[in-house]
Image (tube, rainbow, N blue to C red; front, side, top):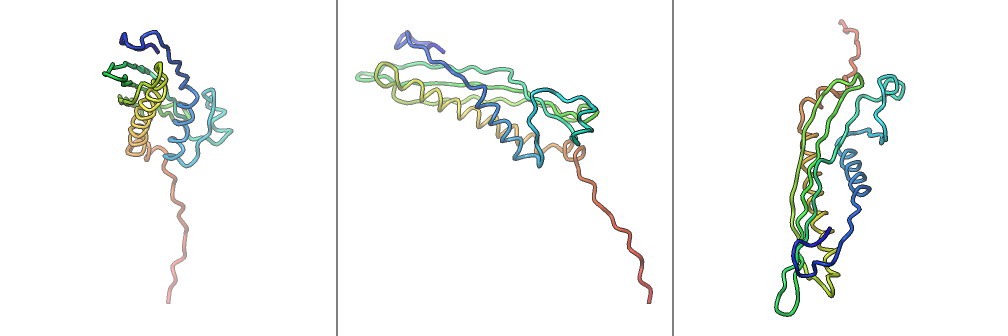
Length: 168
């Protein structure tokens, strides 16, 4: 990303967040569901039954926008970064029936010293990104765990035992 201010405006800050985001979504999903299998492709119905899977969840990032600006002070500059993230997710059963669908978003800001020649910009962007992703994943986990549709769809049937009545 490039700063949206003239101060240190010649700098660029590369962001490669895809792998970290995928890992974070997977870890958050594992905290909500008992059994999670990471797949790169959606399994078909036959694969779902063969692998004893009850459903699948798809997460799609809709919006990721990091921004940084530098505010020039008398002796030094301050870096301010805002990161916006939005993603939707869909849960389907093993027959590809829709169970639950929702979207979450978050926007967070971080500030810090710009450092020499803008070197402080990268840590400020990283901090804002961490805050925004953490907030979005907390909302994601809340939506999943509070969904009565998911609880009903993936409820484990209770085993009942037949007992003979004891007569005296």
